[in-house]
Amino acid sequence: MARTSILLIALSAFALSVKAEPVSLFNGKDLSGWHGDNPHTTVKAKTPEEREKSLAEQQVEFKDHWSVENGDLVNDGHGPYATTDQDYGDIEFLVDYRTVPTADSGIYLRGTPQVQIWDVNHPPSIKHGADKGSGGLWNNSPGAAGKDPLVRADRPLGEWNSFKIRQLGARTWVWLNGQAVVENAIMENYWDRARPLPAKGPIHLQTHGGEIRWRNLSVKEISGAEANALLRGDDAAAGFTSLFNGKDLGGWAGATDNYEVVDGAIQCKAGKGGVLHTSDEYGDFVVRFEFKVPPGGNNGLAIRYPGQGDTAYTGMCELQVLDNTAGKYAKLDERQYHGSAYG
Image (cartoon, rainbow, N blue to C red):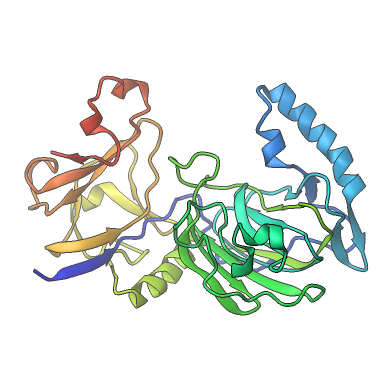
């Protein structure tokens, strides 16, 4: 039987509805818009009071180790990370950097490590993959897509390098000096690998053992509709067919009156429910989609659903989409947990 690749894109409803323009993150004069926060330090706080104390102490260190020189944002290799005051979700981030021998740095997205920056010729770092180049998602699991850059695109130490980083959901693209080094790779949640990336979080500029300079920092927030368009273009090249146009429920049948499109995402209307299914039928296929479940939510992806009846039993099965950590589901069997083939 022919195998079909299908793409269903339903990005989170928090995304912006208006196409944004790039915004500068650094004024070239002072540290406005930034504060100090090493998340590896802050995460150790066990209470809100301890967290506030830790952040206050880091602000003192931040001013000692970060400065502005000749329009560059400069770190001396020590202190907490420079952290945006604002949190970001889907973005395109542009930045130039210049570093020195033995330095190690990186860019954290949504508060999560990291797009790696190396001295690619530093012998102690080569055993960790520095010779492969900068730009990889170094904190991904061994062998995971994106962990190692596709090419080594670093310029010689002392020269400026340029990053363009795009993140849509957990999917991440990185271009270094105009070359693609990460393409459509999932960035893992370093803090809890069983969970996806946070919906939003700050950008951190890491400091780790050597001077690094940053300039031309800007961010463009990407709306749900724009994210859908970008993802459709990327996945179409990989043989996927989009099932959702990001605008309406064309191509869908079933309880269409109970659903709506909000900021490029299919969303169930408050107090409503029912089964929404494709008008077309599929045999063997690969499907990719993103979803956002509210606390206590219960949904699923029905496979080979005939258009009527209980999705778990009348078709092949239902792939469970469920907040099984909610108290009301405490008595479920493991076979009914999120991600199970239920039915």
